[in-house]
Image 1 (cartoon, helix red, strand yellow):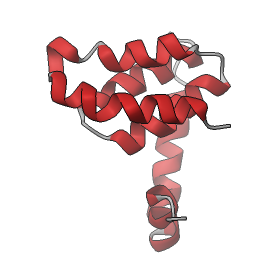
Image 2 (cartoon, rainbow, N blue to C red; image 1 turned 90 degrees about the horizontal axis):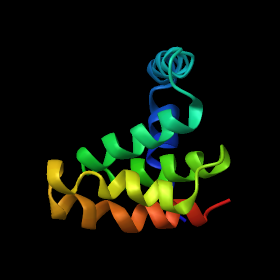
Image 3 (cartoon, rainbow, N blue to C red; image 1 turned 45 degrees about the vertical axis):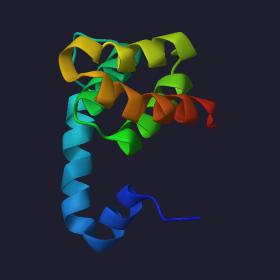
Length: 102
């Protein structure tokens, strides 16, 4: 099995990864949006950035906090008119795969 790219980042640059993790924690703690909505937004952003690996990870995290398969896939497809069909087609399989992971 290939090593997760995020794990490689953490192993190769532990100090920088630690600072990045602090930033992520600060963003998670922002008020105004519930955790599920934040994950669905992250899915949409990762799709707009054409990052299937990020989509997969956020789909898995969204499921863990109660998102449905329909919510996860809708967050990806929402990009159709903004980012185009190619971004959606590139990321939709990753969203479905990530949703299936435990």
